[in-house]
Image (cartoon, rainbow, N blue to C red; front, side):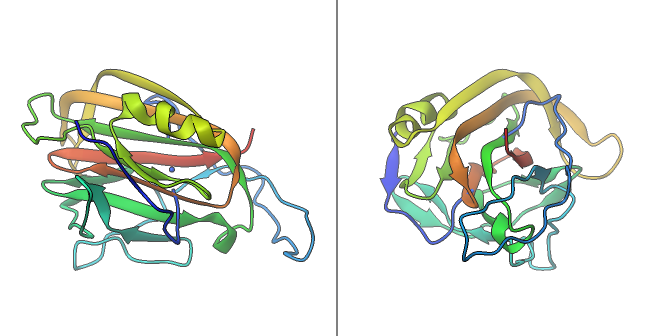
Length: 213
C-alpha cells in the first residue's frame, strides 16, 4: 500500500466508534474573532449534509466535497450512490469532505471520529484507504493502521478499531449487509477546519463527529 502526503489544502476534516452517537451539546454562541476566546463544540454532521441531484454533497459554508487523494493523484469529487442514515455509500472513487465549524457554530474541537465500513469481499486495490488533513498538516492518504504514524508528529493521536460490522446501503429499511468496519478516533490540538475522506468503492463513510474534551 502506497502512502502519499500532499501539502496543506485550504480546507481540512472528521471519527466515531460504531456504537457511539455524537449529539449537539450546548449550541455555541458566535465568538469575537478579534479576541483569543474560543467556544468548545460537539456535534455530528450526519443529519446536516445532503446529496444533490448531481450525486455530490450539497456545498454549504461549513462543508463541501473535495477531491480524494489516491496514489498521488487527486480524484473527483466522486459521485455518491446513496445517502445512508449517518453518511454516504458509493460504488467507485473516494469521497472527502472539508469541514469548517467556524462557519456553522463558531467553535473549536480537539477530537474527530468517523467510520469507514465496507464489504469484506471488496476487490478494490485500496479498500481501506482514508484521507485526513488538519490545520498545519499535509493531506494524508493512507490506511487507518498508519494514520497515527503520520499524524503523531503534529501532536495528534489516533485510535483505530477494526472489527466485523454493518454496511448501510441506503435509507431504505433492511438495506444493511455484513461487512468490516474501521472506527477511527483522532485527538490533538484544537481545530476549526478538518478534512476526512474514505475510499467509497462498495463502501460507506459515516458517523463523522467532532467534539471538545
